[in-house]
Length: 85
Image (cartoon, rainbow, N blue to C red; front, side, top):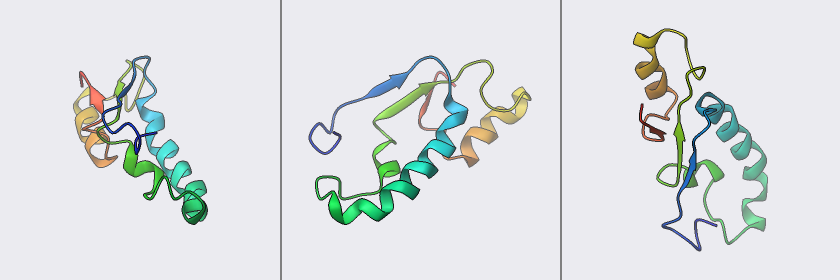
């Protein structure tokens, strides 16, 4: 979809930002063996998410420690995908 519509954006506004890391890992694990069968999607699935998919972090997402939340988002690679965070 993002190859055909490069300016398309998705926003998940109901939390679930903490599920993004395992979701990206699973997409790449299951997508890697099929790269030669999907010439319309020449890169790994997780490479399409930054810049196209954004999350509004819910109050229950991530660590309970507010001071650690920013660092947590940074080392999981989602700091540029979280809105209002």
